[in-house]
Image (cartoon, rainbow, N blue to C red; front, side, top):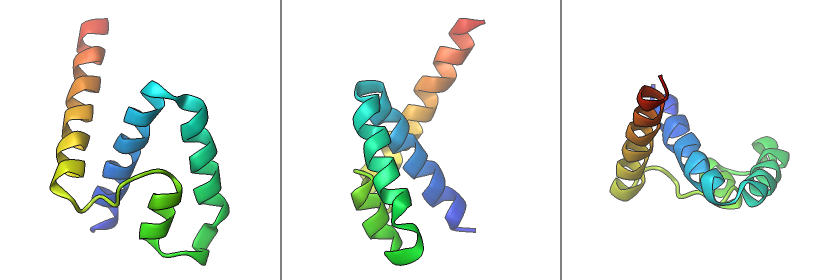
Amino acid sequence: MITYPIAIVGVCQLGRQAQADQASVLHNYKAAVSLGNTQPLPELFRVAGLTFPFTQLAVEEAVQFIRDQALKLANAT
């Protein structure tokens, strides 16, 4: 299913942004969620401050975020 990769890339973008500014990320996320099903997915991503995930850069950054988080977890043990 294509919805899973879209969600994964989106949550990685949120995670990267939250590392820099949690308050703004939470504000943008709430604004996007408040729109519910009233807007198409690209608009919800835009309101959340995210890039719609079907760009090479967005996918590469998501993979790097996952790698970074895995390394942090590995080093924490």
